[in-house]
Amino acid sequence: MDEAVKIVVYHAGQCDPKKCTALKLKRHGLIRLVYHIKFLPKRAIVLNPFSKIAFSPADKSRIKNFGLAALDCSWEHAEKVLAKHVRGTSRCLPILIAGNPVNFGKPTKLSTVESLAAALYIAGFKEEAHKILSIFKWGHTFLEINEERLERYSNAKDSSEIIKMQKNFINNL
Image 1 (cartoon, rainbow, N blue to C red):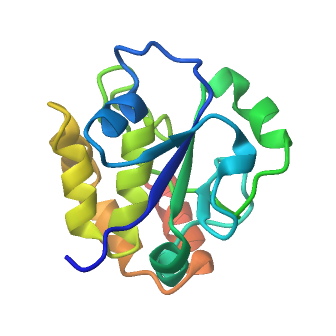
Image 2 (tube, rainbow, N blue to C red):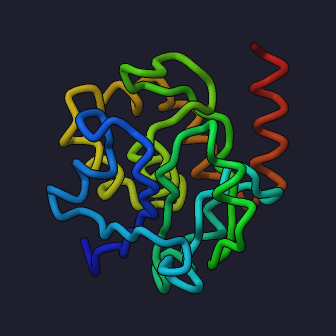
Image 3 (cartoon, rainbow, N blue to C red):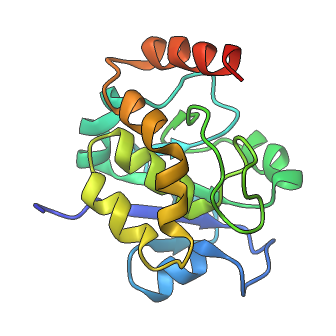
């Protein structure tokens, strides 16, 4: 593995600290936490569920150069948090199924670590995705239930191709 991907997470402090995947990643030294949105890296890819542009392998060079950022806040408060100007380039992850114990089996209800791992995997940083998930007992579950989708997404050309794949996925549900 060449230089490690810089991962920064905005932590809103709205979750149960015992179940917070961002805090556990921080304890293991795998991410840097920030407590104000303005401290997110300026040109990083920010995983934002309200972005109009789908995350795709085309985002790899930006991640390599400027890092990956996630927002750790409860779903109920996410829109309010994201209404503020978020620095970086916002991207929405394609449809994936949660493997975490809290939202197991629910489409799009990913934990912070699942979101980060999905982005890393899709962008071709598969080793890093496995590494951050490995500190969770259930981490492998996320990769197993999404293996086919993650592989397909990671072979997409760009955002528009990801959108087409999602439509097929939805139609087959």
